[in-house]
Length: 441
Image (tube, rainbow, N blue to C red; front, side, top):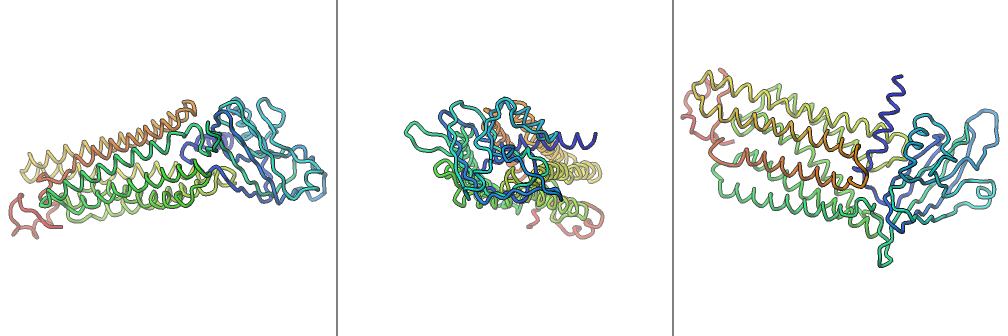
């Protein structure tokens, strides 16, 4: 029972993760002693016309039984299938049944004795004339056998001028979308930098870190856009994907740090962090490192890897846990601001800050809900034709969240003081001027 549920969850993530993993469309895939009955290479959206080119080399087939049993080579091969075959692929994946002969399952080629013995490698190109999302996969219906081989795979559409277009038809507008959003973050960065420069008296350390975060987000989207443009022209990212993933890793780390520092009130009304806040931040950073590492591995290994499904499950679980722990310092800050307003007789100003932090945590909850739940549900319940639109929607939510949060903590006189947090701090602040005094951090 539990194993069956696990397999359904694995399949769910395996087929629906491709919207985030837009890989190069010229790939080299190596299988080593692999006995899986179905190995997904990739999915690709074709226009009319499109082509699938497969080159096989270094073929080796072995039996997994101690007693040699001749392998039926005709039960092995590379196949492709449109979306109507999705249910058949699901059943083959879950129940490990043979998919050969099912409706909408088309062979690119199957093995036979002549093929294996006469050629060290061979190539076949298939014309795709019906626009759709197609799955390309290796099938091994020969029981008790494993295969080792190298697959060079190319998938591309043909432009009206005859040039190859290696980008998925359903992501055709993605490079332009990414460029426009990178431009919006650049404009936001310039605006934020101008505000910090004209309000130097009210700028704290956190405002500088927030500017760096905007710069990294801009760089991330620019590198991602260039990666997709390079894939469109040549089928390969030419190093842009490495830059994108590296900046994505650093930007995600800084995003978590900025949100938690804002939530803890660091440099706004608290000069240092308390032990519980440091522990919460350490846990969140650890989870973010795990999630970002899984994200990089997913993009690096591809769906043909044996451990691909587990990297996906780990990514989603750690990413969601990271989002939950990110909110911990904010709730504590709201409690402290409410307590201080009652104890210290500074109700008006403290309650204003409490209201700001309540709005901040509401914005954070909405951001997590939309980007981690709503957008994911949209992608898994709507047609693959809307995947690129869902990416644009997710980026729009990010832009709105950044704008809302940055406006909440715009450099001004609102945070031009440090709150005395407890009785131990009171003794060290007896000689300090009134609440209008600005403590330099």
